Length: 256
Image (cartoon, rainbow, N blue to C red; front, side, top):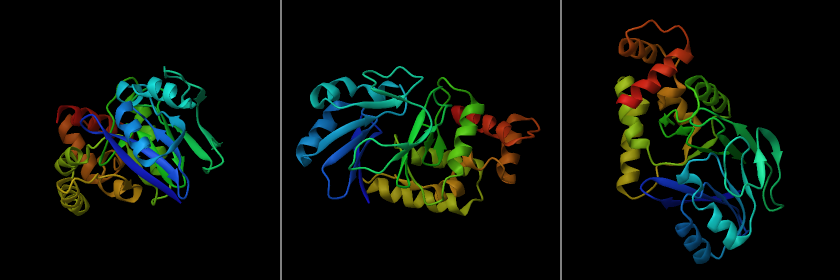
């Protein structure tokens, strides 16, 4: 069993701490800011063993150099992106062993937000950076809509009880778009109520379950008739594939 905690950073980032229960060893995901990471490590007397990096954007990597200097730990990250102090360049693999304290990880290639974006899956927990968000997905900042659609379809095929650990607290804003696209979706309406309650009480809206994303995230629902119709009305065109619907949704969200 894993103990996973969110370390807030900047305005809406989450840096994720991963521990096996009964161990002080720690994996750190996407440390964009070293200060809260070091503070949490010292307060809890943890033992960092590695940094896991999903992509190259500064709010995910800006803390790497200081943390490597401070703790002398390896950096695991995408092979095809510029990651400082990168020790182990990664592409998709099924059996990544980092430390005896942890189960093996699966690495997924999930380009689209950036061209070399990866995600880490461990014990049914997916750390997906900016590829998938609560009720949304990342912008196209280096990759293509076709790539991102394919990456999200890959994630959608994981077990429905997979826990989704995104890197940003964007769920409320994404749900406002989701209900605009699919106004008759009762699951979205309920998720809006649940998410508002969490945020009002100072709690993260994450992780979410993939099962919930499949019911409420328009970017995973591109084959639903209501979403196809709404996308066609927005674009003024007949859309003949889920990839075309996805591309339209992503453009629509950018303007929303």
